[in-house]
Amino acid sequence: MDRLPDRADRRQTEAVPVNLAEHADNTGITRADTLSAGAFNIWGNTFPADELPAGGPVVVDGVPFLFPEAAPGRPDNIRCAGQLIEVPTGRYDWIQLLTAAERRTEDQVLLHYADGSVDPEWLRVPDFWPETGSRVGGSPAFTCTRMHYPRHVERKMGPVIWRHRVPVPRESDLGALRLPDNPAVHVFAMTLLPGAPLEVAA
Amino acid sequence: MKALLENVRPWRHDLGGCLHGCLATLLEHRGVPALPVLGAAWTFRHFPGGVRREEYYYPCADGESLLTALAPHHPVRSVWHEPADAATGWEQVRDAVAAGTPVAVAVDNYHLPFRPAYRDVHSNHLVVVHGYDEERGTVRVLDAVPPAFHGDITLAELTASRDSGNELVHERDMFFTGVHIDNRWLSLELDAAPGDFPALDRAEVARVLALNLAHFAAPPDGDACTGLAGQQAFLEGTVKRLTAGEDIRDELFVAAGAALACTAVHADWLALAGRTLDLPGLVEQARSVERVAHHWSAVRIMAALTRDGGLTPRRLAGRVHALLKDHESALTALDDERAEL
Image (cartoon, rainbow over all chains, first blue to last red; front, side, top):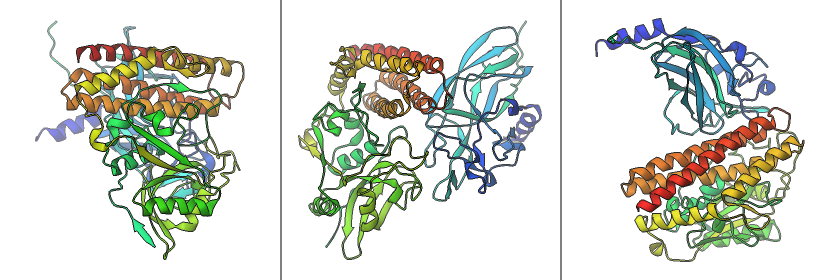
């Protein structure tokens, strides 16, 4: 147990947060004075900005992420449509995500390795809707107390952004990943976690 | 006069909606466990021109009850009551509750203070009523859809929601607006005593799997899109219509919602049966069916994005192809499980 802090420290030091700003195409976070400036879901609901981190570094469950900056009308998340995300080439064990879906869903991401190989892996995303458990694993990263509607603030319930992860099983350098073409899935942030080196016989 | 019925409990499936929730609550009040009944049937049925703008839409053949359509393998029915006016509508609901029967009533969320849509968005929803106090002018309402509510509202509020014209006023009045609520209410009928419902044993699982597999194997019934072939025809036809520039948004969104709920609740039924009977293969196939439900989650959102050009026919076609392929694989594997029983 006494090694856990070391492991946590190393995780934060070696983790690679990925800046997704250039891929963001959906505005899911709004301020109370700009309620209609976004539409996370098809009904125009959004997350309340004052209950989420300001844009920049944030640590969730020991994992450092780059949380998107929320500004009126500025895209702050990726609504998945098959985007190819290039990542700093390196050996990773996990792709950690801050994510949420419009109804629970799952799909495959395609992991592109530096040696040219491609593997599908599962991405499972819980519902952002309040009072709804995960059912596909993952932990609530941010549970809001209010939901923004385009014309009012709903104070009886709040949506959830989840932390979930995708494995990188192949012991090879990862160079990119392609998100699924599933517009029910939104990604707010992504961080790559290197694995502990193994002693593999040559 | 007042009455308050006990043993009325919320039931919710995260991929279902108010229809499954209300019917489950009414079934369990009658002593019938909900999931073994509501989750048994896995079907696809679409009746061209038959989609209704209701959150509780479920495809029904002419003259078929909503609950029969949802749970065709069990001796259950539902009856829509269509009172002439609001006063008669309340009298009927009050009399049913006074007689010991909770009921489901159609409502417009716009008039319900516990709904987020209150005084904002019109939407055709379903809630359970199981009590009233005429002296206080209140009714006891249960709504399991988040934000879940189980408490009293005024009779005036309930009446406004039941008697609403459910007007389509602005662009956010989507999918479930534009049809009068008309004070309709739904009662549940059991055609067998609760103790005579089939137990969830191997014979029951074999029976249900055989019925579902036969449904999907059968050719479409007339103009209706039924079974696996009908599902393929409907979905591929929708892609063609979108390609031709037709507005398919509302029809596909509502139809996909019903298919999503049916598939997801059936996945839970398979998992329950597999765990109850120690059949790990069935639990694994429950996950395969859940995968199909997750496709429907995507189809539903894709449908909603079609109108403004935000989703191309090619993208929808890709999803449809994957759904059909995984659905067919799940059926093949379930047939193998059935053969092992």
